[in-house]
Length: 138
Image (cartoon, rainbow, N blue to C red; front, side, top):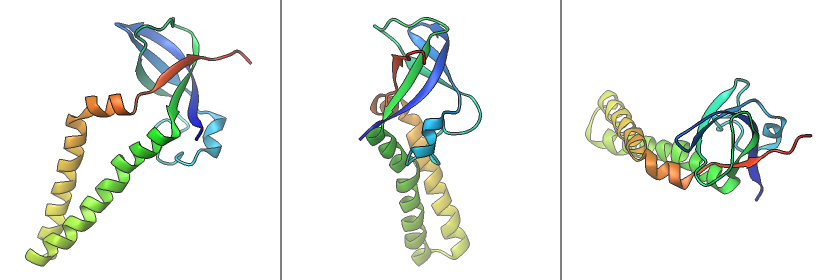
């Protein structure tokens, strides 16, 4: 599988973290996860990427790289699992509660799911790590 690449510019480096500004990219057009990708919009996006042990400077043109496998896993964690959590909990709760309460409890469980994702942010940051490489001037 190919990697997902976005061109960007390092706007600042502080404490080993690069602030990378990514602008919309023509490569998004052929990407299978473009609709779910946070960086696939028409607006500029800023990402903070660890550059420890690498030689980058402010103003460098770079490519931000994420493997397609990692992107697919991120989509599964962000959209597929929560969908099944919501549907299955709605079905199970509807056996014991009326429809409104079943819906509220299902929504509450979905909220807990996303809260757990947020609490485990460090785990997901390591698992779906973005990489930087110098971009060649074209």
